[in-house]
Image 1 (cartoon, helix red, strand yellow):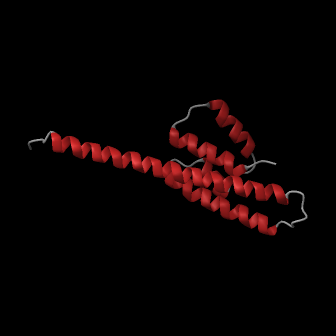
Image 2 (cartoon, one colour; image 1 turned 135 degrees about the horizontal axis):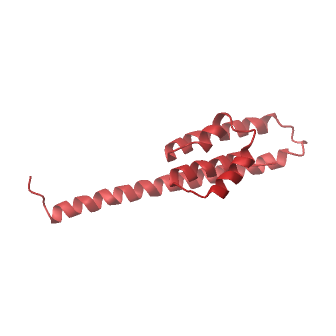
Image 3 (cartoon, helix red, strand yellow; image 1 turned 180 degrees about the vertical axis):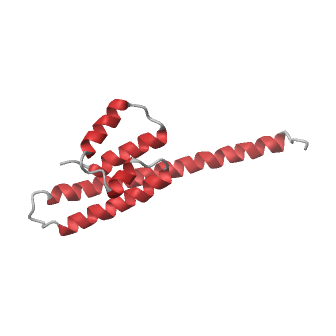
Length: 123
């Protein structure tokens, strides 16, 4: 069993962050072998945090549907539910990352404005 959503998310974040760890990339790609379709593929290939959030949401919908189709007596049922909890937690982590990035961007804008107030530029 593998957590395809988490491995695809790792690849997407590696893209966004510019991570060049070939070993980590290859490991994630191996975990996803045969499962690079739909939201999982889109998530693994995402290049922005916005795209990651969108594709992760779609992957969560697919996972929830898979859980709904799985009989609660199935030995894989508990694993699927645990996977859902882990992916929802990862979704919140990505949201925090996006919020923190937006806060940094806003702070840089404010610093820029303060510099121009302190040192006006004649045009």
